Structure formats: structure tokens, C-alpha cells
Image (cartoon, rainbow, N blue to C red; front, side, top):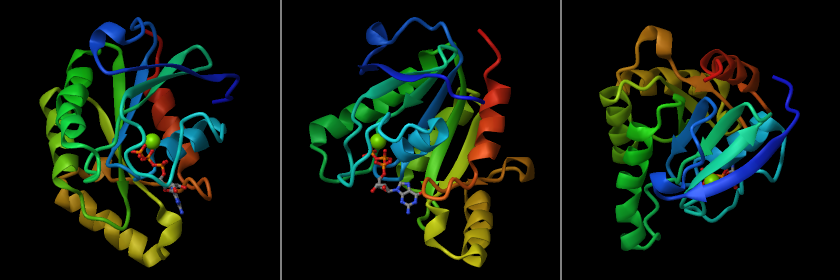
Length: 196
Ligand code: GTP
Ligand code: MG
């Protein structure tokens, strides 16, 4: 897809503050520091669109971005970062589950995992919600530039098995550094984004 515009719309913690459900939505989820914001920026070729940082836990609200005034990209708050205050951490589960279960225009959830790490409890929880609410999802293994091709292939198989993914739903390999996986991801996003 040719990116003509990519704009931040708003941040929200509850449904009353979400924008009108006017466009198909693609949501990006994953633990803190996994590279969600970097992946979004690489997809839309805007380096600073979604804020990235070396400090995990920076994205703490649900961020809506409008792509070409046609699709919403949703950067969900990362989870699993120990230094985030307990009070804040407790809000994340309900905040994410509420969004997932109440957004009629949500078309695809992209669950992002670090290729080097085993899925966490929160990753599994998220997957449980996706299956429970019957939401289409894709698993993406990012930061593949950090490991060898052999190791990547091995990890892909291991994680796919571990999460019980079907043969047709094996993880997509991605790197925000090299752009690997970008075209494939856009194909999937395109298929999921037929107009509301
Ligand atoms: P939170 O918003 O805190 O939940 O983090 P996030 O998931 O949005 O991660 P973010 O995109 O901010 O990236 C975290 C760190 O990982 C940054 O230092 C990025 O530069 C780095 N990073 C992200 N993706 C990649 C990648 O594909 N390859 C490499 N080598 N580094 C990456
Ligand atoms: Mg982020």
C-alpha cells in the first residue's frame, strides 16, 4: 500500500474516548520493548510516528493512528515490564481486553514476539482472549536481524508449536532494522482491511 498519510489521532484508556469506529482497525500487541512502535513506523515509513524508546513501558495508553484516512492502526500498551507501577500494571489487562472485545471494526490483531524469547504468560493470556473472542490474529517474530537464519528458523518452529499455531498460521518473520517481512505483513493487512 502506498502511504499518503499517517497521522496520530488520539490516545485512550476507555471506550468513551475511542474515535468513532469508522475504519477497519489493525491492532499491534506485545510485551514492553518488543518493538511494536518500531514495527508500525517501519510499515508506514514514518520514523517518528509511533514513539519508540529504549525505556520499556513508554506506550501506556491505546494509541490510534490514521493511515491514508482509510485504516486505523492501534498501538496497544506493552505488558510485562516490572518497573511500571503496580497500579498501572493492573489496568492493562482490563484496558486491552475491553478494547479487543468491544471494537466492532477490529479486523486483525498482530501479536509481536521477540524471536529470541519464549512467549510469556501475558502473551498466552492475550492469545487466549483472541481465541475466545474469535478475533483474527497473526503472530510476528521481530528483531530477526539479531539472530542467525538457522536460529530464526528453529525459533519459529518452536514458538509456533508452543503456541499451538496451525500450519497455515506460522509466525511471520520481521525486522524493523532491515525491513524484512514488511511486504508480507502489508499483504495480510490489506486483505483484512476491506472498508467498513
Ligand atoms: P513499549 O512502547 O515500551 O511497549 O515498547 P515497543 O514494543 O513499542 O518497542 P519499541 O518499538 O520502542 O522498541 C524497543 C527497542 O527495540 C528500541 O531500542 C528499538 O530500536 C529496538 N528494536 C525494535 N525493533 C527492532 C528490530 O527489528 N531490530 C532491532 N535490532 N532492534 C529493534
Ligand atoms: Mg511503543
